[in-house]
Image (cartoon, rainbow, N blue to C red):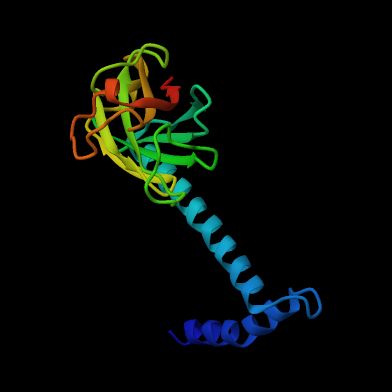
Length: 193
């Protein structure tokens, strides 16, 4: 216990000087330092999430599957998804999406650049998906989402499934719980292989 306090006291004493020493003369402001700390913290969270996904898959004895979500029809949406095992009959899907170029086909009442996209796993390929998803996932908002599904990775790989993100560009009823692809535009899609 005393060693822990010594380490903590040492870090507390050295940390302020370390932050100041990392600066470029007097050009660094508190905002610059805060931005660098936030960037470092974000990278640490991403690394921790990746490690957790790999650990889950290692426990299940199944390697994670990375799916590249390609932009469809100039939607401005693309990204990646990692599917990790949570046992033989359960998988976790983690999305990292780039939607900076997305512009809805119909007008948005708010000028907010944050968009929520419906996500799902469909049977078929990216050129032929239609109807309801075989596995409905939570919406992807703020370009990141994690959701578990009641199926194993191997079934997804062997079953000819795709991950897709859709927008409600054509759906006139925003309160509609129907996730039928016919009311939506496919924005990004990738095969689970």
